[in-house]
Length: 473
Ligand code: NDP
Image (cartoon, rainbow, N blue to C red; front, side, top):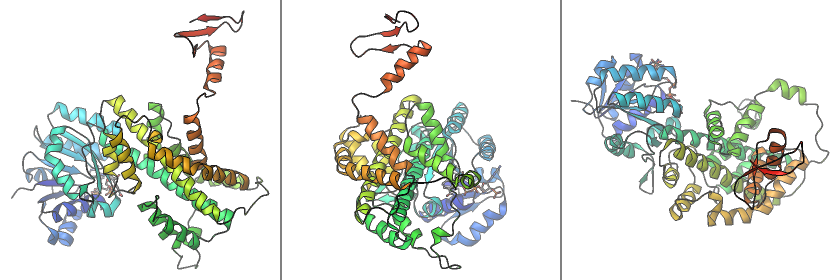
């Protein structure tokens, strides 16, 4: 019998995705460059459902029902191009190739265009949730054509995470839209983690609290507005004790954060689109700063402030508020970036639906996403999440605490780039007049770049080196 769908690339992610499909009753064709992995999968998990193994890619393609549906889960980059090429050569018009790896959205746009010429649907799909998500229900962000969604949607919605009966899988938009949204998801994940890390650091430094005490704080926070997977696992990690030394686990881990690149991609794209994603950028740069031990050693003798150990228990609630407010800002920025990309690439993204996809299965899953969904339900054209009445009220409630937190951090010399830049963004966006007017004046002075007036149409230039009279440009 022919298989309903196939998976090629059976490392951690591919194997679990294939098992997820099989457990949902689909007959799954399986293939891997090294046949051993395929045999291993069938041997270990063959009892979970129907697997149709093939040693060669040609056999794999031949074992699929038409139109064929094949998911690629191989290492992102050149390997993916090679596998797509081989698959496409074996396929026919109308068939579908799904790339579930972490591809750059521009690669996906390029691949989609090339395969479209050959009549093959290329479906760049963001999959989040790691190893466990792939098996038990990931968050799935498919791009590609509407026709491909008709053939793939029901299957993807079946195997995705479900929240209150709603699957965390929606057709995102054409070509690279799915991988773009996955990229922004990862960028937001960076900023969420940075804000959590700042909260922990500030409370530990200011109050002298132990990691175990702070685990309790995060556990309490998880019951309220901040309730989310990342807050929940922060408590778990802070509670962990190193078996060898008996020290808190966080004190035996090297304090250099690594990255695989999706945060960097998000910031690079934001620069291209002209969208300020300061939360994601600061998080990415904070990781970069941590990863320079030679500079950190050289700077270790620089003096900090004399003040230390300030504040009492009230700081805990202040930090909770600062974390929530900064999180609202970081998400507002990420959603702005998706809106800008939607316009730039003609994707027609429905922003509220993106919040729905992320409610379950993925790393940034949180109660909070329901509020974002409601904000876009109330106003599809919302210019910024900060202007949604619910978020505006939350920011207003939080702002005194937020300012105290940033002040305290500055006074005792604990870096909180996430909190500070989010507050600066909030203050910048709400200002009626920005000093950008002076910047425009300077640009006109040294470069005759011209400026616009508040009271008249048109561009103007001042003859700075002459009589300093204004002329229409
Ligand atoms: P890896 O990224 O470690 O990739 C290993 C797999 O790729 C193996 O099956 C390997 O085959 C295959 N492969 C590599 N190069 C080639 C090639 N040139 N031709 C054919 N096959 C090749 O696997 P993961 O399961 O960790 O991830 C798969 C994809 O999913 C990646 O794009 C990753 O970025 C993405 N992803 C991963 C997540 C995670 O939590 N790990 C989460 C979400 C997405 P072989 O066995 O023969 O070496």
